[in-house]
Length: 373
Image 1 (spheres, rainbow, N blue to C red):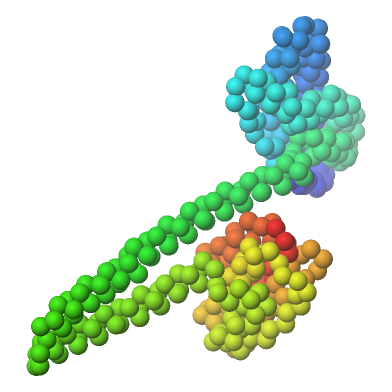
Image 2: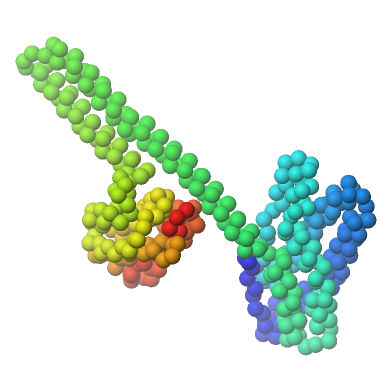
């Protein structure tokens, strides 16, 4: 669950903190009574009417329970300093029947109903404690309240995972669109322009050659052919770079040979240690390769490293890539877009990226990926 409890010792906290806790304790009983009455009236009204009326009434009541739960989360956040992540918002399916079915099947709303039904005993304990006991006992009396909030009003592990996957998927869609725009721009502004220039130069050379004799005209023809030749070579180099950026040809033989090629071409000496019994999925291979390439580039350009190492291991269904350098350290996700971009790419396939880079080094970046997507 995406909930973090803050342990509070009431007797040691400053007066403002004590006042917040006491305020929550005193509010708990009237809030619990309000919630219990709401749920009982809701259920009795829904069960006591015909299905055609009771079902919509219950659906509206469930969404109201969601609203009460939001108030409770707010109170816990403000007065108890609990960080309670809200569940996913209500997203109804299209149409009246879709809305009705979505409301009746809303797990967060039903968990709010259970909370409202289960809360009164904990609220009684929390409310009575400040009146009968010394202040230091109030924190202990609020433990059941905290447990109920944590268990029923926050995100479940499943909903938190779904939200993370939705964010990763949205990031993947955005990244794909950005890559396509970049490729289109590079082709249009760079490679295409050079090819057009080459075609024009060759056309002019053809015309010149038709009338060429000796002297200046022949020299001009040779110059035009030379220019066309240079443009052709530059265009081919750019096309190779674009293709490599989409899918490195070195990966055609597998990830291990690709990493060996990458290490051999690095400006730094690179120690390569690979234990890869079988080939991962193509998408995983591509992500692992680009991570290793980007991390080696960072080590070469920014860290002042004299040596680097790449280690690749398979553990069960997971693939673990570690890139280490002996540079100055201090690498962090917040210092540039490169590492953030790698982390976003890794999350697309349910992977993680961790950085260990203390000042003075060494820097170790660990990438954990599923072997198969």
